[in-house]
Image (cartoon, rainbow, N blue to C red):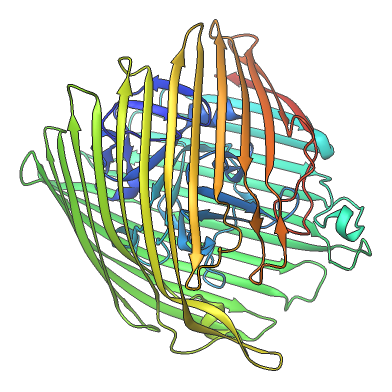
Length: 605
């Protein structure tokens, strides 16, 4: 879904142009486990059906068409890929996989380059400060990637896709349930010759930069007596990428990224009005230069214990409280630092819902950290529905904080002890309106966020640089989406984000486009053939801190189809950069020309 109208039991997808009736869907990322219709803030949920219709192999490619998300990739598939949400820094978006926090402790951000869509059930996106819910790093918002849960009788699938740049992907999976047990497993392998990470036009690099990715994902759940549930969830990938240097000598180096996360969520009702959920989890990641010594490795480790109590004293009121303990580790072997920090977060939230007409949310959180000063954040949200006119108004105010990264604190001759967290205050107000009995839906939200104590790299003399709390910034913008059900089985979806993101001196922040627009026209023929034609437009941006490097705006078209040849066999195809646009996303980094891919999916029991 490209835009959520919480008042309606519809999934809306401006990127796909598809609107479909759904049963109420629970949003895990809010901690209330509330339905879309009951959420008073700004949210998007991308369903499995929409993921399949898009044909996108990675989460990063999928996110490009959604509101207020700026996806930036360095070179071909596998190149470092980060997300800027509502103009906040890339390390201000907290990323979860099945509720496990997977941001890098050393860099602060999450690299989406190797995250595939093959076992993803849905993706939840909460826009705006979410520190009251999740603590540090959730200043711009939260992206929660949720893997498939087995249901029904056991079923299996195999799929294959091949195409441009000698890219081949093989995937197999199985899922199902029996009695009190459910499971879902998948494995995928991608190999690609790629193209030059460095722009050949600017630097003369001509060789291809290869990429390999092996991804394993699994979930197993058991229904305990009564209403209890326990799950074992795991996700693993190993990726290798050839990376150019910038000397135009066509001599790459190879980087390897290996990561896994594991969680064991347990939930049980103590009384009908009191539910307890305990989520222990572990995240591990290592990045290494495969052609250097064994010392060239960077490790990240997270151990999290999250305990949440949900109380339902009346039909209208929900109270959520609990605590989260984290041990965060980071090690850079080559540069000689290895450090752990400890954080305790205590949270309380309340939700009032009067007949799904008046919705009020509020809460606060207090974080105690072993390295920096304590932080207290709070958030208030409200919405009102006009049932007779199909209208909804909503507003929110929230504070947030961003913890200093390990590099900013401990990296030799750069990190600074005693840094304080970056702070933010933001508000939003919006309206949703249905026309023609819901055939046309309009959503529009204005937001504004102010940041203080921002950490920047300061030249302290000569070639000496240090991280310091010296800056401030402001972001504001308007998010607009329109979805329409058209005659003859056509549907149209459009969204536009207008963004102003400036520092304390009024200078545009780097890598933030003022305009992002996406539209898709979808047609379904006899429930057998689905076709899609889409366009994405981005305005020009500056891509370094001094403004000496800028890239022009660009327009990219794409097309895809899926044809159900038999009950078990589906054929797929897609074309990216349909008109072979010559463009740069980042100054000096290569981008693909026109590219085509075709494949098949075979399901069996």
